[in-house]
Each structure stands twice: as C-alpha cells, then as structure tokens.
Figure (cartoon, rainbow, N blue to C red):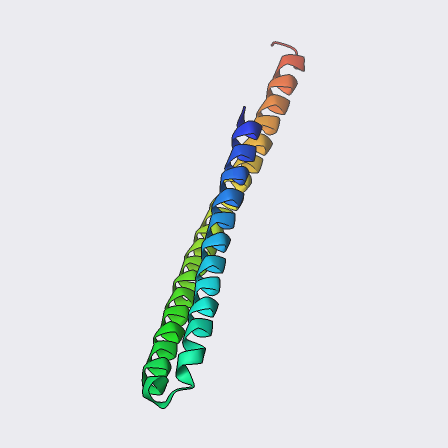
Length: 117
C-alpha cells in the first residue's frame, strides 16, 4: 500500500512541476508577443518612451517570477534536507533497536541453554 502512495505522490509532484513549467512558458510567450506587438510602435518617436517603460516593467515581472521560483526551490531544498536528516535519524534508531533485539534474543537463548540449578 505504501508503495502505491509513494508512486501516487511522485505523480502528483511531477504533475505540479509540469503545471509550473507550463505557466512559466505561457508567461514567456506572452512576454515575447507583447514585445513583438510593441516593437513596431517603438519605431515611432512618440511611443519609444512608453515602449522602454513597458520593457522595463516586463523585465521586473520576469525577475519577480524568477525570485519566486528560486525562493520556492530553496524552501523545497530545505524541507528535503530536513526530511533526509529525520529519515537518517529514524534509520539509526531502527538499527539500534534491531541490535538490541538481537542481543536480547541471544541472552534469552543462553539462559534457556543453561542448566537449571
């Protein structure tokens, strides 16, 4: 059951990542279309300043999107590292538990083999 859960979670993560990529690509296409539409008008002296302002606004928007993606990436990496540390601690506890159980079983076997006096 847990393997199905892990597989389903991977599929959801892949889906969400692809949705983010799709949205980012749409923004890039919108940006390129906006620049192309404004380019012809920018050739005229009257629209040149507004074209530059529009390009600067778009560049800031791209920078903001990049900052958001990088902060999200950093947060996810931090979460991954925290979970990896927790997993390692639990694995270490499990190993210690298994060693203690093995030792306990060995002591029980020795006691059973000892003659009762």
